[in-house]
Length: 227
Image (cartoon, rainbow, N blue to C red; front, side, top):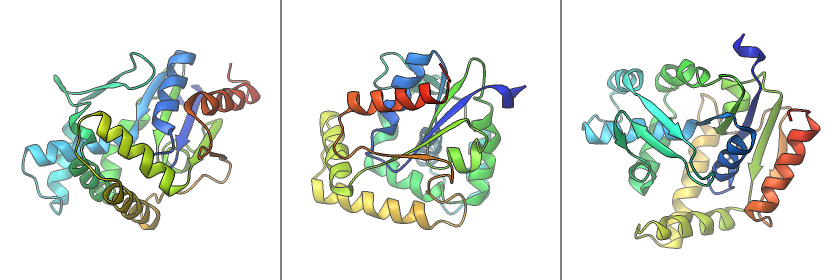
């Protein structure tokens, strides 16, 4: 039974470290991994590539239903993401795709189209998910739900360093502005707004590095007797 397979959900805004921690955790446990945000990024990238307007909801739904996405956690730091046969790992992390994915992810029809696709990632031995509504909407029965937060300025600094390391030309004020606008959109959208589940454990990573955060998360996993 799928609902007997354990799931760990890690939700929160960008720049909190949830993506890196989710991948490290999936590798450590030997579980499957789902980056739900990447699904929306791949959809946004596909829409841009195929010149589908973001206000054409029916066309976006068709694209969503046809997406073939595969995640491969190789080094526990960054997963490889393929759309069909194309490696889109870097392409879906550009500022353009980031903003586009935030816009289309607020659309109820698009979210519904990707709902069951996300739940299908729940396979033995377990699943670690990274997103914004994993614990509230997609896997409300998950035995462990985490919600990561961090100060916006620190999150923007991390995002800025990440983009610069990938050769993307950005400046810190622009990154912070985009981050704040995305937070507002995600928190105020009518469908599946960004918020912690009522039973989620809050983790503030502002003053924590990745290793410290990972050790804290691993303790939460042990506390729930998932290992």
